[in-house]
Picture (cartoon, rainbow, N blue to C red):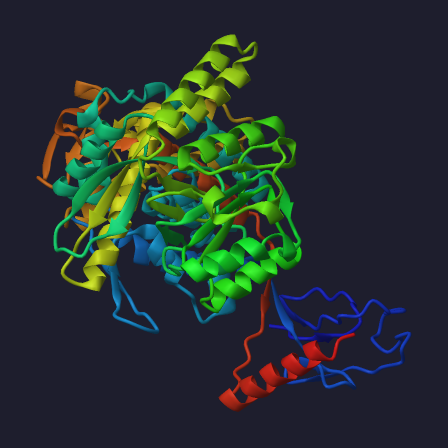
Length: 609
């Protein structure tokens, strides 16, 4: 392996090159000696030390097989840790915490996010898998383990093809084309959710508990299509469910410094006051009279405004962090006239005065009596849930009737849709699931399971359901093989499509493997049963029997399955086309050195003009 120090940007082709990145815009040429400020740089212990004693860390650049090898090893390590949790007989993973008790979890994305590898190249591969799991979690809320398993299968099979001399770009195109065909077929064969029983089955499969599935199903049955569900901690040993009227906004906190619960990344306000305004707040002097009154009453406050910036935001954050005032600021939802409509809806639901210049009310004239009230408000990164106290129900009903009349008179479909969303936000109730457990470790695990199940139910309502346990992918692998391969343009693309098609059987085989059964045997049997009995047959890992999965209630949301295919195909295809990998060269430093570097950075930051 060649290892060469390169100064000034001279290109060197080698199996592995250590490149010194010179952070200077004054380079006059190659060779590293010609700089306009005549400062000389030297390399010491993989760092560049200039005459000001500033250290710039070097990078390692790996090429071809070596670059892909590190990525694959990192992907495999994360995938092997995650895939043991798949299926009803999947195991748990214990995560060490730097503080508090270890966490025992069964959630794929939580496990993937916790893994950080010592080798920089392998760690890049691990982060790619984390991206797959996170995307699946953010889009569908579940299916993270399936995405990870699919990614591992596609990458490992694809690497063998690349090593054999096939064109990696064509392989990537073939994988993406096949993924589009498969996802389109899933949308076609998915069955719509027919009733509460389907929702209960989806929730039960996602969380692995009949009792949790029953609670979630009853929550959705009660609140209907317009409501929302939140997870809270209970002081008891049992799970409970409460129903409250409330509304949800698609906006979260403006600054992460407003977060109170660092683990769940949310801020929760109990019995808060609410300020609703369409103004942009950037001058803290506009808020000082109101904030001084709130400091005396010790009431939490939620500020909903067009935006909060500058001195106003800084003042709110400082007072929040010092414990002087429990405050959270949220941007108003929507844009233009629609934003004003949303703000007026919020003001009516909470009983607050709508503060706007057009109605003759300015911020500096606001008093505590003009603020609204609520029972509880939960603010996440991209969502705010307001649990109303029920005092304004008559005003809310009148507002809903007004919005419905507007929807009837609206000329465009878009206006009608937005009016329907506003009715749903005002009229929908909130189901609060209070999770109880004997220990903190069990409580965290149950909350993660509930969140997965809730997300799965929402996904099922959107695109329908398909057979679970990997049976849907196994069916597509068998029934669409010829159709997918015929749609490719050349042999290399067909090989890419073949890689994806082979990977479709991996989730089914992993479910069987986690149950102690040979995966290939189960996969073969499922394909035979589907040919004989039709789509929907598969293997129930809980009872170890072959049956009609729809009748047995073993179902998955179609959206979860689609996202697993799309996300795994996207990342895995890009990994195959990797020809160069740039990583930091790790350097161990003592605690004294860490402290010196920290102090030096602090002094340097303080001396900037």
